[in-house]
Image (tube, rainbow, N blue to C red; front, side, top):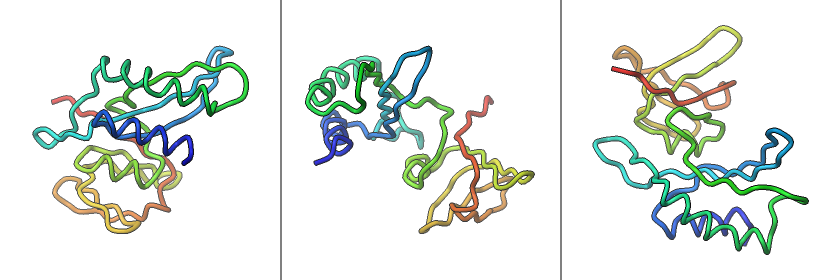
Length: 150
């Protein structure tokens, strides 16, 4: 099994879902960032991920990285939630964001904000002001979830 698959298995073992793994360089430091989300939905929204769960996952994932390092050289492991406003880069990210508000950049000028209500194949269905908009996943240049204060 791959490192990604091993990490995903560990994350599932604590009733969470793997959102993403990424290697970033910040302030001359290499960070292997593991982002997780809750698998539980409450009142139509995904529950948050506790700090305790992130600490537990750090202790569970760390030995895997001792055997199969994600990068050569020194790095720091960081386990956390991707946040309430997060980038959406894969179709899987969109699937994990159903029911949430999303903001899309489709080309240089066209932007669309609304609620992601369903996905069929590569088609996303976004509700905005009571109207349904169908968007092809491949037409999206940038996307993210956003939080609307009420």
